[in-house]
Length: 502
Image (cartoon, rainbow, N blue to C red; front, side):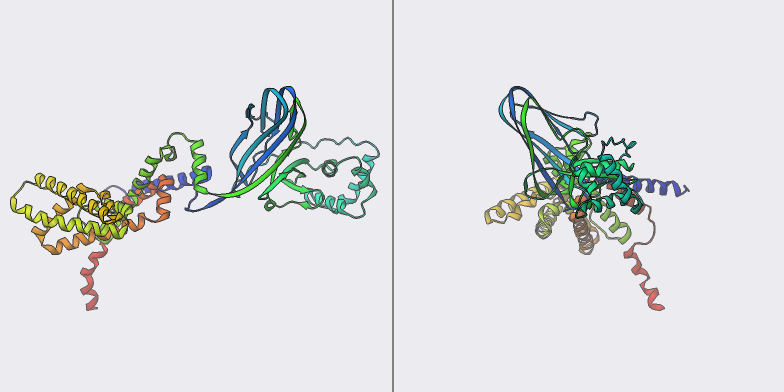
């Protein structure tokens, strides 16, 4: 007798492979685990204008870096007559680059990007290098040291130092030292340089506030402070900015947001709108962009519709195996109920049952006549196939004439399987009587309806097509059921007399 542990290890590996692959698909492509989930998508449009010098012109626009909470799902440019590329020059930020050989007069360029709001997305933040030395001129150096001498004793770390500086800046009336610095430098520069003077990594950034319906919006000057393990966003007058504030980091220190070569009077403004899109649709777009040729999303739409049904068959097979092995339900044919359940998915349950019972009943009546002709088995099956086709044709035509659209779905039933079922049930009737036919027929319908109820669930449809690796788990469960040798639930009635005696 072979040991059981290799079989159990194999089962465990199948389940582990199914779960891990599904988790990878969920994390890498964002395929939702449940149907109907929605994601917020922000559509940001940058509008660039400038006056060309009647010659070659180039426009460089700094693009937002990757950041936590947002995922880039698309970008495009509207710029008639311009060449357009997106490059990564090695500065950590991407650049949109427009070019034109002969630009004349006022020019208008558009850049648009779509961002999916994804709270689970986390981008690793690189630690900053050594803090650069700030070269202050007098008397500004003395003013900076005076401010730091007051706030340093009131702080414990980088974060609290930044908070104390915000309080110092917000004090009314302002201190003379601070007023002197602000007379020479901008507010964000003073805030960042004071932190750098205290050996705290800080950098000036520009961010876009994501508010639905905002037009002609400009970037906001903010400061990022390294607090030991991450960059924290600060407003010099209001303090730390929470992640829920929906600021999109657009530019960090260098390069400039917009640079125009061959033109003057350049300006840029932003418009923002938001909308919701199904998470599955976004995941499919990402999977197609990164497709390796093995994704179901890469198939034509017609074939995808077919596979959405085919992928449900393993779940129907699992229900059938459970019903026969664990419950002990008798069926006419091993997996005929699965095919009937698949047909019910097309016809809906009630119309499908009515049509099926009508075809089988009429077929059994005709089969009883064929039995008197003493035909061979192959000939009987062939005649039954022709009869079933004829019945389906008549039902379809009559349904169309009477306006019963549901009757047209009779063609979804497997004709050969129904013909063979009629033949099998007829033989059982002759050998074991009508009671056995009723048991097997009702058992087949019970298993078919049970499989249909499982396969028709929105969750089952979603998981079967979008996570095909979960069929490995279905395979593992069928293998486990295949090794079951205990009593079936229907067999326990034999022991009812024993319980009555006690």
